[in-house]
Length: 361
Ligand SMILES: C[S@@+](CC[C@H](N)C(=O)[O-])C[C@H]1O[C@@H](n2cnc3c(N)ncnc32)[C@H](O)[C@@H]1O
Image 1 (cartoon, rainbow, N blue to C red):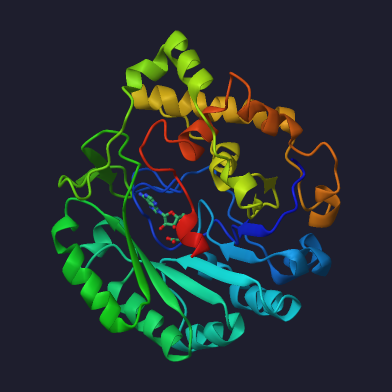
Image 2: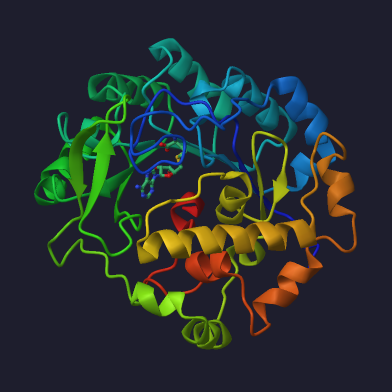
């Protein structure tokens, strides 16, 4: 029951990033940055003010990932992790990053600061040449150099690797290469952001067409979208789906909350994404219709349940509110379940959950 006894914190340290991944919401198709993004970051001072020591001491998992940025771009990233470790010597710590910034020295220092029971997940999507097709603006050699510096200082590192058509046939060789570098674990995954389509247009900064990203095609990596998108457009079909779905709310099972770089205190990053996103897709495809209506529905829900902000109340004070997100909890068991929760925390659209389990390894 809400408010649950929070054990896990997902942080967005910043929405700044040097990369332009085509399917990331901080840019339009890998090109121009979204103009409504107000770039900001959590400084060490703000962090200390938002999260009292008593709150940090209770957590058993704290990780920095986020929707829009890269944690290592936040100026105080290392200092924040150093501080958390000084307050809570045992909590699990993790950072999800593209790894293509900071010096080798910084990475060695990070390994010491994070200490035991911690790891960094590097997003590396294939060999040099393949990787940059998705992680635009990053440098493969520099990432490997940084990861090696981190591991040489005792840091544990893993890789999350996205599989597309352009790298699906080299997965096994790539895994071998990464294990030889010292990474402990490689998690290959196919993106769910094609939504049943075979390709995704990538644009240059000036909006001109650049190339297509293509979805993996082999049975091993293909991601099946289970529902005909047009069915989601019909209100009667949607009603039926909503009635029958069983939600397995990850926020509740992991006892996790998400805090974005503006200090918004949210149940998860997925709904947090809808909260901040202001980009309404303007094409007439079924996907655009579903995406837009889902974002509107989430915004209405969030307005009703209320999203506290850490600039007004600290994390302890927010969790002491007895009615925190009560209506969200009720909505999971009602016939009218939120689409954002259906998409991420049920197996309605895809066979697998949109889970963060890798972040819990
Ligand atoms: C905005 S990134 C934030 C962290 C960091 N910038 C990174 O690349 O790991 C959020 C997460 O989305 C993942 N991601 C990026 N593009 C994706 C895609 N097309 N499908 C699935 N996950 C994706 C990243 O690997 C990362 O774990």
